[in-house]
Image (cartoon, rainbow, N blue to C red; front, top):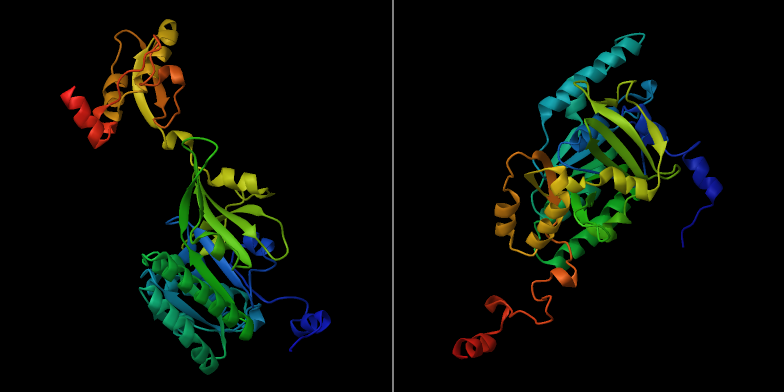
Length: 377
């Protein structure tokens, strides 16, 4: 049985874990310097939130020489969505080289933009079985290239979602999780997994939904660090859901020509939040998920209009569109939201009547034998 003391582990890694900087001071501060080596990390977010841009920045920063605070290491990029754009990487590398030249006392020995690109090893795959095959091959590849300290998978959900069989998808997910954990642990490198998001409907309130990382609760236990990128009212927010040392926080970030950077000084914020607050940040507005109709009515007719609206909720969707869009000449304009999934009280149910007699059910809802019986009676 192999074991080591906590003191030996602490001495092995110096004052703490090594990290790969994100070039965003606010995020680095929350992660004690960036994404840690020896762990699996997750970056989730909606489309165009900056997930790939962040991973490009990590591939550049891991190559910064140790004399400038970097690692001077190489990286592996596994592309499953065909989003690897070398011209964008070159642009970010040129900006990094320019910054290093400003800080360097002598230009001799500094890496060039072409040097940055030549030490990023690209693997492409489309299906889950191909991704699993690449993951197995990485053990031999890293042994041949021991300077690799970063593995990026962009993205894991794209391959797994193409598998229709849930059991097969679950088996792939378990195997990939075990391989990435073993790679990060055995070679002491950082594994950064990009994940897509899914929409979770709220059970407590009609019409609301929130964005959550894909692949379910099983995968959520795999990453040691979980970061969610989102956009709210023109701002880019990074939500640290899980960290090795810090509580949940949310900070601003920005994406510029130079790469992944801090937000402007006037918009930069940092706050601790609870799980409920995090869900509120990712919740969609209720008006985006409910049907909104333009009607015209006057204030004195509000009671009559509300009663009329309740009765119209019992009709079909087509009837709602036609009746609620009618205008009353001379009235002021307003917006009314109608939730078609609202549970109606018994008094407004189409099968209940004020006289105590139940109205006949729709022929569509009747069984075949009942329809025949009704046809001949």
